[in-house]
Structure formats: structure tokens, C-alpha cells
Image 1 (tube, rainbow over the protein chains, first blue to last red):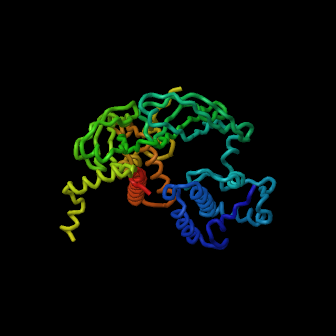
Image 2: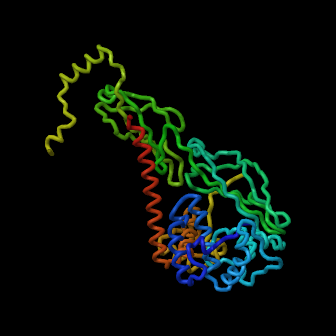
Image 3: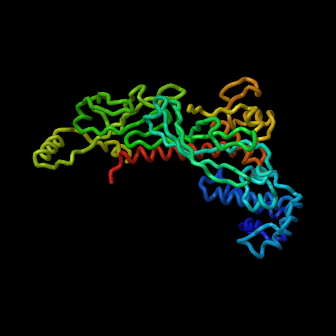
Length: 310
Length: 101
């Protein structure tokens, strides 16, 4: 196992005073705290920094660590605690609520060693991301789930594959979690198994954008449909509908279609159709002539207000 | 197998995090989360998002060694940042449907 140089991690000298170590920790904690900096890299960095502080803030633990550092620093990539090593400081965290490294656990106890001593321990919860299509949220939906689950046997951890079908309740929103009781890792001894958590991620839709429980869709229309009005067929999550475009509609205009959004605790949302006037790409002489005729006859200046303000 | 939306009672939260009911009251008073059910703290139930904000607040307070008022402000700012990021993503995606290269 790799020896952790906690002084190097915090960027302080081994002789540094606790107040200087604390200042270094605070600076790095702000820089890497996972709640302030999303991303796996920041989280990994924060874990190292927090673990280093957890050890160096406590005088007894620091003294034990310094002793090991003199011993283990010689073989940093292949470290084993000295035979018969036992910490008197213990491995209980005062401060940091995350997981500790194997190095910390082997030196200060805790983690798997606690499990290996045969104390009943509730199984670990397992959390996985669950992609869900928008259409699947309209009603209860049964989905297959496969995941790997940590199992501890004889003090050693291995992974077991597991598959099951889970019903996702209607109206589940992006970022919500679904709990499936008892489907996490088995407990040690007589203890209960952990739970499976499905972290719902709504899959981006090629046509619809999500705004809370409401949806929006860009509806391409011709200039003459916008000018003269029309009925156009618009897709929704639950089938097609006819949408009436009023004469003189503008590009960017939003038309509300009630009850065609997402199902939610607050009721079903609406679908907003946003008109997008699209120019024809046909540049035939006949069409060009018609545009010219329109230009000559229409008395319209879309930039008139620029004249008033400049 | 039926999945259910995560709900966490105040008592469950206190037991899991090793904190007192009075601290949960303080966190609610700081607007870090609002119970979705229950009138007394012993009956309070939080939805998943609320319970996660409470947990996040505890973590920030412990790991950055903040006082509770500062923690409340930080949670407000993180929440606001998350909302702005989400709105920004939504607006960019909607705008992209109207822009032509």
C-alpha cells in the first residue's frame, strides 16, 4: 500500500505548528470541497486533504504518524505497518465524514478491520445513476437495473453483480432518488442489508426542453403560416395534436398547450410551443419575383424603433 | 420491485448523523431545508433534496469549520449557483434551437 505523506499533501513542513497546518488545511479545503467544486478530481483531492488534517490536528495521532513516517518513508510505494503495530489514538473521525484511505485504516484502525472482527454491521447502501426518458415519467414504469455490489467476506471485499426490475413512480423528476429497501450490500452478522438508491437522470430529449414540470418545443413555421395563420401538427410526449397559429404570429412567440408537460406533485405541467419562422431555401426565379412583389407592396420596417432611439 | 421516493424523518436523520433534534430545528430556522410533513420536530419528514441539504450543511460546517450563520449563507449561495447553472444550461439549449450557423 502507498504511504501517505500528509505533510506533503497539505504543503507544510513536518515541523509546522498546528495553527499553520490548520491554515493550510482551510485553504485547501475551500479549494477542493466537493460541495463547492463539483467533479471527481476535487473530491479525491479533498479526501486526501481532510484525511491529512484528521491525523495532524490530533497530537497523539500526529506523534504516532511521525513515528511511522520515519519508518515508512523509506519505502513509500510499498508500505506495511511495522509488525504488531497498534494505534492508541484510534480511527474515529472527529471532523471528516467521508471515507478514509486503506493507509489510514491500516494504521489507525476502522473500516474493514471493524467488519473483520465480526461485529454486526448494516450493509453498505449502493447508489447508481438511472437514465430515464421523459416519456417514462408520465406513468409508473418498470425498468431493469444492473449494478455491482460490494460484499465483505472474511475481512476482504469483493464485488457481486446483481440485476432486478424496479418500478419508478410516475412524476419522478431529474435529480431525485428512488430507494429500493434491502437491495444494497448484505449486512455483517445479523445486521440488515443496505438499500439501493437510484439517482434519476432525465435523458435530454431531441425535441423537448424541460423547465421544471413544463416542457417547450421549437415549432418551425413558414413565413406565410406566421403571416396568414395555420393549423400545424405538433408532437407531444403523449401523441400528436393540432395547434392553431394565429394570423400575424411572430418568431419566438410562445403558445401554451395545457396539460401536455410532465407529471409532478404540483399537477401536470404545460407544453410551450415556441414559433420559429424558417425561410425557404428555394431560390427559384418565380419565388424571388414573389418576394420582390411583397417587398414593394408591404409597408413594413422592422427596425423603425432604431430610428426613434438613435 | 417497487421503488419509492426517498423520505427521511428528523429522528432518522439525527440518528444517522449523530446530531440532536435542536440542531435540526436550527437548520430549519436557517432555511437550509423545510419539512414536507409533521408539525413537531419529532414528526418532521424531509424529502430527499431537503435531507441532502441538511447533510451538506453539516458537512460544510464540520469540514470548513464554519459557524451556523455562515453555513446558512453558504448553502444559500450554493443553491443559487446551482439554480443559475441549471437556468443557464436550459437557456443555452433553447437558444441553440433558434440559432443558425
